[in-house]
Length: 301
Ligand SMILES: [Zn+2]
Picture 1: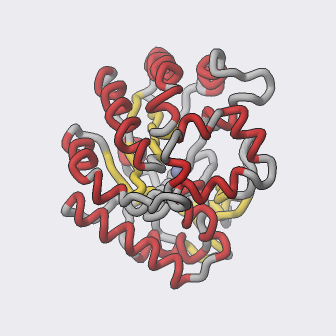
Picture 2 (picture 1 turned 90 degrees about the horizontal axis):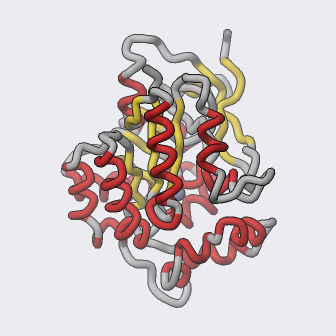
C-alpha cells in the first residue's frame, strides 16, 4: 500500500487557533494520520507584508488571496502590533493534537525571521533559532521533538548539520522525490530527509488554468500512479478557506488506495530498507518565487 504523508505547516496564531482544530476534525473523520509542524514562538507575520511587495509576490497574493486568508490583525503582528507568542498561548491546543494521535514537530521558532534570514545566516544565528524552538517544544510536550520541517523550505548548511546534532530522528526540510540521507559538499548528514514530493495548492492555483474549483482533480492526476508521496498543506489555507478542496483530496487519495499517514508513518512503512544518499542543493520549484532546499543528484551511485 503506498503511503501519502500529510505534512501540515502551521505558520501563524490564527492558523493555530482556527485552522488546526478544523484540520484535526477532517482528518479524524477519515481516520487519516498527519504531522502537525508548529510555529512555536512569536507571530511576526506583519513583517512579511514587506516581502509581499517584492519580486512578483503581489501577483501571487492576488492569485491566492494570502492577505484575506491570513486576515486582520495577523498582517499587523510584528509591525503595528507586538507579535503574540503562539506556543505560550496555544499550549493546550497543541497538546490536544498530540493526544488525538497525530504526530507533532517543529516548523520554526519565528517563521518570518527564519524564512527571510536563514539562507544568509551563520551557524550561531541558526543554532539560536533552533534551540529556542526545541526548548519551547519540550516545555509544551514534555519530550524532545522527533521531526523538523523548515519554514518556507529554507535551510543552510549549519541547519542541516544541526538536524543530526540536535537529535532529530528525521526531517522534512525540502522538496524532492523520495526519503534519503542528505549529503552537503560530500559531508553526510546522518538524519533522514523526507521531502515534499507534490506541489502545494498555492503553487498550482492560478497557473495553467488551475483554479480553486479544479485544483483537487489536477492534484489527484499527479498521484494516479501509486508511489509514496508527501503533501504539504497550510493550516491557514486548507484549514480555513480551502478546507472543501482538502476534503476532496482526502477522499480522492483514499479512493486511489493511499494510506494517509504522518511523516513518521511513511518512514516506518519502509522499515529496514536502507535510504539512498542524495546531495542537498538550493533550487527552485514551479509556482513559487525564490530558492529553497531541494534533493539533488544521487551521491556516489
Ligand atoms: Zn510555513
